[in-house]
Length: 360
Image (cartoon, rainbow, N blue to C red; front, side):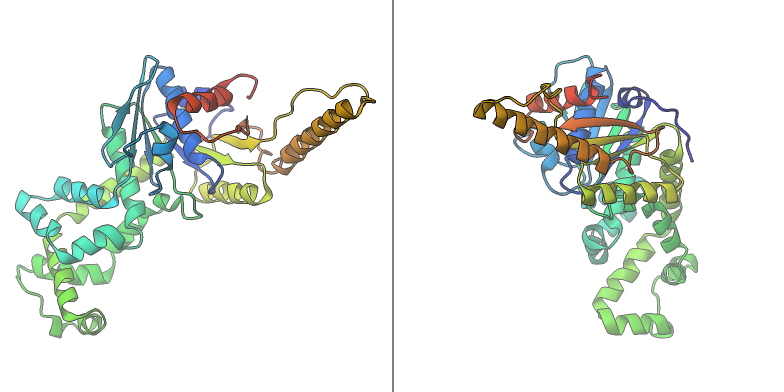
């Protein structure tokens, strides 16, 4: 596990090459990821924010009217650096990976035109997570950027992309995969389905045409598994290096704190650690209460309201204390804003709250 000294969020943004934002839904994780990218650009870095979440929250937070695609879009900002953004397109990323690893253009086209592949590229369980890991790898190698910020989806499966490279490796090593690859390895052009009991069984379930497409896909895939395996190993190594940071985003509610603890445990299980925590949408403290409660009704009402808000703020910090027990993990508290973030100007407000020394 990478051991990080207790540093501020700004120091992490200034030194990391990869930042992964994780947390449950509804805590403002996408907005935080976008604000981190804006701060990095203000610091002179060339940052790209990539969302795995198919919802359009990142485009909304950045005020991009036409939405985002799989290709990075550069945004106009004030500052010496650059801010780019994209939304993961699983199928397009898979297509690019096939073209990059195919031995010849003909092999790539045979795969891309295959019916089984077209279904796998869009719907097979685990494909999105692996493509997220692949996109991370590609963006890290892209010379246009020196910082990649990943906004994970708002589910308990948000960190499945950590396991996706290992899942792919296990699939490549599976006996069924090796059976389907036999024709190419033995110099045959056609696999006799009837000669393989396991394939006869599969054919009865999925249908002969679907099985034929699947076999054709795996035959066309021959020789590419080495490149896929290598990329998977490189992604896992990259996430475990000191260049990568994991930022945990939560809000001061019992359910989101519990989810944040789950994500922290999940990272630890993968031999990774949380670098910084952001507790978002907190009740502001509003300063100290007057020494005594005013006697007039209006003043008393204001006093009671302030006292209630201060009590709520204390309760929220107490609620989050278990999550924040590790003093080596830097924590930033961000107060609730009166409206959502839908432009770079309002995003800059969040950026200021995240990196203002008072909020540290």
